[in-house]
Length: 190
Length: 314
Image (cartoon, rainbow over all chains, first blue to last red; front, side):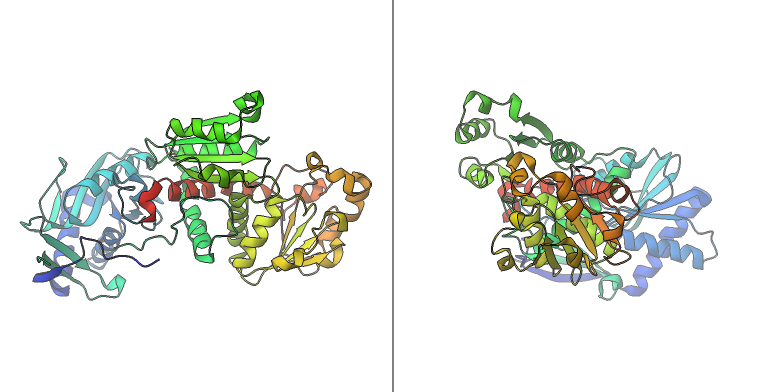
């Protein structure tokens, strides 16, 4: 099936580069170590697919490279928990949810690339609670672009941005065959 | 941005009109749903607020229960009718039943009916997505999908495999749906059974036909045994079930003709000692209960893909 360009993706021009690959690695390392400083060794990193899962993997790798004990790592897919599954967009692929170590009683750090309305994080918390009862759930995001529609706040933030509905924040990943960077794009009148 | 699914059908009426891509989409999605059965809370909120009506106008325990569980695990509200408890026993026509159901605005209607084409007829009269859960001797698409899912899981692929379907081919919607599906997915399909139970011209569906089971089993990767459908008067096509069992029943000696790692499947219900000896049905090569487990996941995938109504087709 050919995808129509979604209205969110069309007519966008790049306004500025928020992070290049060096900046992205630096911010991630800082985030990872902030988590360890606050939680000690007990953190269980859980990435939200797809971008967040890659970031969580990288954070764990950075910690191990930095001499820390390897924390537990998991990934969740929120597709089945979205509040807009049937709102006209083509149905996305569903990725696996992998929480090999039980989350009961643990400090779970949810990791996502961009925090915007908070709806993704709401869905992610519902997924987690169907798998067990963590002692504490925290949120780490690479970019917080404001514009919340639910009462959700991150515990660890890479970069804070002031954005409007005309903006789009795009995180590019080497895992997806792009070079690592974060760009701010703006919709232009067509 | 995630890739979208290659599935744009509004209904699931049969395998005949699905593409290999669409079939693979459902199989892939089924793998994801399989995991939900192992969770402490076996439920996701995806179809919350959607209504599924299971209209089972022909006897069924497995398929009906499977669809009911699938709907519940997706948080849909489901209602089931069976033949004996529905107004069709009072003489209501299927079209009247359909119009009445439509007035209750369900999102999905799952129908099993003794008459081929009933699900198709239903789509003309209701807005809901229709899933064929078996119509006469025509098709049983979710069975073919769960069979493909089981084969793929055990063999790692479907293309290039040799699959034998043995038994009452003539009355079997399971055989028809599987032939369509497995051919599209690139398997070689052989059918075997008494000549009186092999439809004339079955070769035109792209299969090889055998009137003895032994040559059909030679080198097979998958052996799918079918039940003799006595309720459809299959008993009139051969002398007696004892003779049938002797000539066509799958026993360990015959199974040895297939590949050493061949799997044995059966859509259920089994007539033990007729199409299959108990030692085969319960043996290490049997994947029959895995088929049942995968049935729930495949039906969840189908309900998920159809549950968006016309939105999903955009």
